[in-house]
Every structure is written in structure tokens, then in C-alpha cells.
Amino acid sequence: MGIGDFNSALTFGTPAPLFVAGQPVLHFATVAGIPVPANPTGFGDVTVPAATANPVTIALATSGIPVGSTVKVSVTPQYGAPISVDSPPTAGSLANSTTSVSLDIPFGNNVLSAQTSFTVVAAVGDALSRFAQGERVEKVTLTSTLGQGEKATLHTVAGNQFEVEPAQLKLAALLQ
Image 1: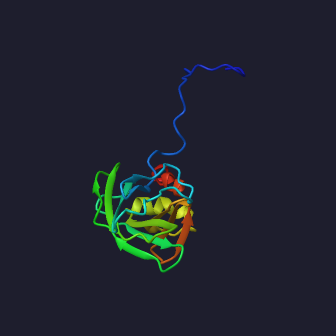
Image 2 (image 1 turned 60 degrees about the vertical axis):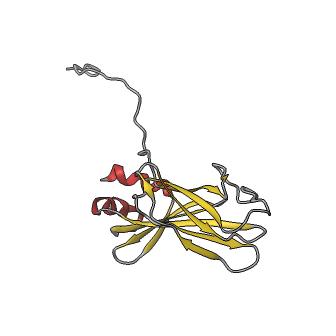
Image 3 (image 1 turned 90 degrees about the vertical axis):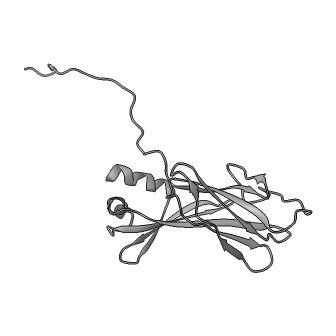
């Protein structure tokens, strides 16, 4: 066989995505029945009319987070102490789950945030260890704040915490 000679068949195709679709997502769906923009800026994303009576309903949606998870919703007013409440467990499917809370929203500018944590199986914890200095991850906390996006925190079996970009969580499926 000389240089450049080959007897194998060549195949062509569209490359597969580098990352697995379906990273965990936690987002606000509506506040007092008003839809939250897909890409909130953190300023004037939702204006609740002054005549709206408290408490208001805040609807949340998740994807890639185990069904039955609870979400802590916090309102931080411009003036005054933050207010937090835990949601009932999410309902739906792993791909699309929802929950809601009723909460008094003070008059004026407020920042809304939501946080949920879930335990991961050992294989995923091992795969996520590359983002946690080699330590097995046992739990992930996902936080969503209007206008500030999402952040993910990895909690290891040794009790350490590592903040990562939520998109890195998609890598765990590739590394198993």
C-alpha cells in the first residue's frame, strides 16, 4: 500500500452537537399574570399595576430539574427587608415542570430571585467532578434572578461548593 492509498469507505454527515441539549433551567413565567420576558434586563421587566392587590401569584417553570422539587422565591425591595417563601413541589415532567407561589410584593422597584436544589446520581456527580477540583458532586443548586440570569453551584460530598456556568451542567451527560 503506498502513501495516499486506502481501501476504507468514507462517510459524510452533519456533526452532532458538542453539548447535550437540556441544561437545567429555572425561570419566572408570570408575575401577577403578566408574562416575564424571555431575556429580562433587571429593570422594568414586569410592571405590576399599583391597583393590583397583594398577595400576587408568581408562576415558575423548570426544565431538566427533577419533578417534585421546591423553589424558594425571594423578593428584595428597593427599601426594606427581603421576603422569601417556598413553593409547593413542581408538577409536570422533567422536560417541563411548573409551580407557583403567592407573595406580597412591596410598592416600587423589586428584584425577584428563585432557587432550587436537587441531588444528582453518582454517575453525574462523578462527571461533574471535573468542575469541582476532582470532588464528587452530590447536589446542584440553581439560582435565577431577573436581569442577572442563572447561576449554578455544585455541592460536593466533602462539603465544598463550586460556582459554575449552568451550561457546564450539560457536559455531565457527555462525561458519564
